[in-house]
Amino acid sequence: DSGVTQTPKHLITATGQRVTLRCSPRSGDLSVYWYQQSLDQGLQFLIQYYNGEERAKGNILERFSAQQFPDLHSELNLSSLELGDSALYFCASSATGAGEQYFGPGTRLTVT
Amino acid sequence: DQQVKQNSPSLSVQEGRISILNCGYTNSMFDYFLWYKKYPAEGPTFLISISSIKDKNEDGRFTVFLNKSAKHLSLHIVPSQPGDSAVYFCAASAGSYQLTFGKGTKLSVIP
Image 1: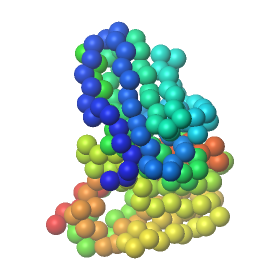
Image 2: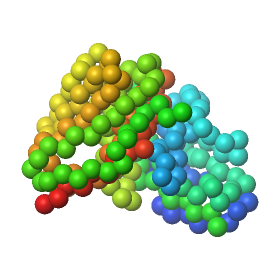
Image 3: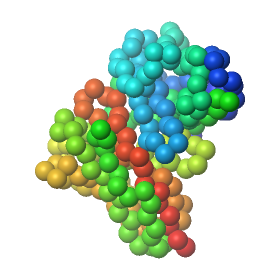
């Protein structure tokens, strides 16, 4: 158990809808990262937050947004969903924003 | 452009023998490298890392070797155990802290 929690574990929704994925980092970790893993793809970095502020952006679509709250939990919002957004979404955390990242169990999103 | 490459999608090894997983990279700015292990339906688990100022790092049965001139790193598992069967991801960072992952190698350790 990495100490990173993600909810929900599974999510099935229709095209055009909006969903919110939630992540709680390990106790004491200030940095949160979001990754997407599609079929046959490695983990693609989406976005990083450090202590409430956006630190880095990767291959994140404009339809996606994220935020980190004062209690350090983070939410990833996915809107106008398309079939191609079906993927595993992982959250990771680290203490300082560098070095090892510890991953949650992921949220499997299926868009039908 | 894939900056971190794991060219072997799968690898099978007998229990007790050495497993060698390989990873290449193209970005000369990468200065920190990590290996993660992933079981089905779970998130990746951090295994071992190495800074670019070193060429070897050991942790129990796991050793990572870094060859900067060849832009190559490898993970050695000795001896391999059936519980090591998983997908192994190589990752790298360039000071900006975000990780760039390879596509993974599925290791099967045969009892």
